Length: 191
Image 1 (cartoon, one colour):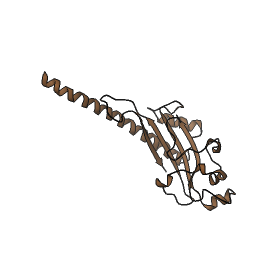
Image 2 (cartoon, one colour):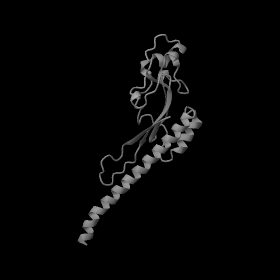
Image 3 (tube, helix red, strand yellow):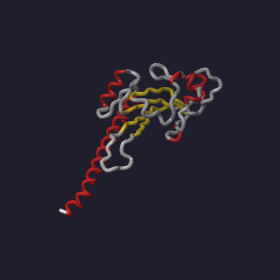
Image 4 (cartoon, helix red, strand yellow):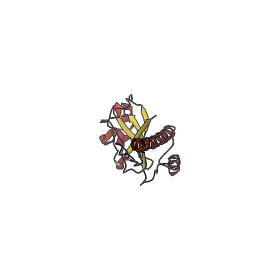
């Protein structure tokens, strides 16, 4: 009995710790797959400012709630590296954002209070109904620069990319006082 008690005092916490890690690993895989799927749709031209497309994302997120008070948020962005022809076309003779990556679109689905984009948040006054930002604004306004984006993807002048950032609240399971449990999981995909 003593040997069994000693063995169980080690085996039960180990078993609970393995279960905790396994549940968290499964949830991170689901979050990664969801973000990859919607990023692929977004890169192919799906408009996530529409309720129907957002409903598709909500359907794909089985274990996470993409509501305004839910446990997940998806941040959709288009980033463009400004070239002189962009400034000329927007009738902006002096272009402060020349050769810089700027946001040209921003749409957020889910609980925006959980996390913002790692590269900054464009002021709401510049974002139109479909999430689009006017060329005159993104050529001129320094508040629309995607800060630190060049360290992730160095675009050539005139190139653009789509990006989806996801943040998902992880289950707060703490069977054995495992450090780093709970919290959240951040993932990003660029196409």
